[in-house]
Length: 245
Length: 245
DNA sequence: CGGTGCATTGACCATTTTCAACTACTGTGG
DNA sequence: CCACAGTAGTTGAAAATGGTCAATGCACCG
Image 1: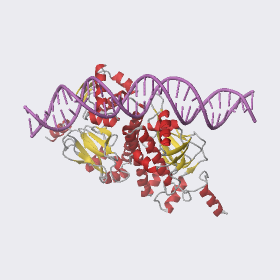
Image 2 (image 1 turned 90 degrees about the vertical axis):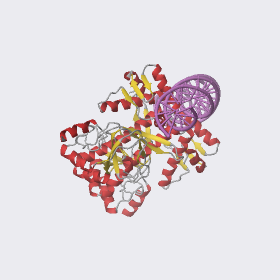
Image 3 (image 1 turned 45 degrees about the horizontal axis):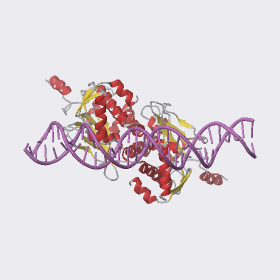
């Protein structure tokens, strides 16, 4: 019976009874490279809320920093507001990825995070994570790695925005999402883009019209098949070539 | 006699005998908000090399990460290489600012850093800083802050590249450098830009020609006075307005 | 069934890039 | 000490990329 429960938990990522040990994201999420007994300690501090609706805020800019969050299911965007109130999307996050680390320094989140669709989120209170880090050296190291991954990915985006054309930017985003799908053992060539064209454009520094036109061009060149948010990458190699990797 | 030495040390930032306690960058560098006896401990691990020539590398991409560096005098740029070998400048750094933290995660620097002019650099071995951090809680906190400042400033650049015109980008850079001059108790309206037009353009995602034209336009509008690398900001308010702050 | 939000497409426009010519400055070797 | 090559910066004209404005389509929902 309890066995049956565990196995059904593996199947439904929205389930909030699941433990870090059972979670099939273990191989890419925080537990990555942790010993089983350390995972149990981590598991004890992780708060699993009920699934959030689409467009729900996980935290807002300037909220006091209390926790980092792991996406368990669904997807999330982070964004900043410019001085004149415009939105700037700074990242898209998929299951197994961690958000909220930008708040560590100041004690307040520098970004806001909201769900792009129904999503389940694990909350990891930072004070408890901090004390856990002193117990588990691997934990601290892994955490440092996550922070500097954030820096690295921001700098990749800087390069993309600074040097690449609209087509190159969009190809790069598709390739990046594809790779993250593969990491989750899902199809890297057929998936659903959870974000709107507006969000894509905002993230890549393009207007929604340009995004739409590039998708149409890619379609005409038989590089992709797009039907609204459903996308299928028909020629991954050519896309990688365009994305310049 | 030793008094005389100490006072002359304060005057010459290239001097490598100076201690963190005497360094006039103390108020903005790592010692910020540290107790005097903690500064002495920090001082013991800081390596002060002789001044580096212009265009000297402090570290290269993929060098093993062993230390972070504080700029003591002169200035530095950090940059990445794109897959096809182009340079992408990711930051300019002035005295009191810390570089090299992008290496913490992977154990290898993700960027390269080179001097823009003759510069003195303090090397802070990371393993010793790490153990010092366990002794001095403030130290660890301050260090976390530095890392997330890096994230925040990268994200500001992302926003700038994504949303702003050439004029806005350049105004924003000038305002940023001006503010950092003021922080060092120097003139915020008259200074020397240590980097080339090429570096500015590279950093801001513009061609060198566009940078040059924007400077000329600003000059015509009496916002600035430019003579090569010497610049004087004639109308700080108007520039701030353009930079959208 | 009409409304609303999101996406697509076209025509036109603006900003920035590209290409090219020219100037000023710097350092090196004769 | 001068000449000259090489580097850095400025300016102009033409080209291109992406943005703006506007019309239309389409799905979802009260």
